[in-house]
Image (cartoon, rainbow, N blue to C red):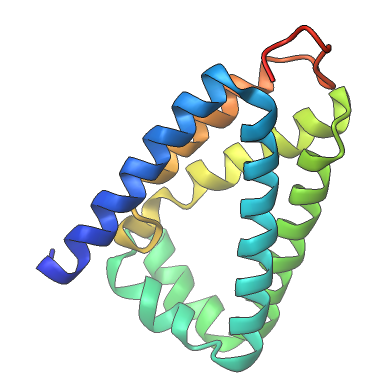
Length: 155
């Protein structure tokens, strides 16, 4: 790992730990931040998919592990715009589910986000590993709650 990547990696993991603490003690703001994060990710990925789709091949490919490396240099490299736009739309749908503040929809969105965060682990440095797993742990803490939270619950 180069020293240029060390600081962003440490920052990502520090933020993930702070988010985990927030999820444990202030679940509603954590839910809103999670939804906002997926909106931001969807918008950024959608924009980059149109403006510079090859960045996903050159950026994630070298650090990917196993079958992910094969998929990136094969499937993704052939049609990066379509693939990443599909991911971006999915991220926006997940964000909407998280933000709706309804037991079933919120949990569905949180589960989908958790699976996504665990699923990107083989991207290695491309997903600031292991911060994605820390974020997934925070979402698991939110999944166990009954949404919407009652007024007396930890807000």
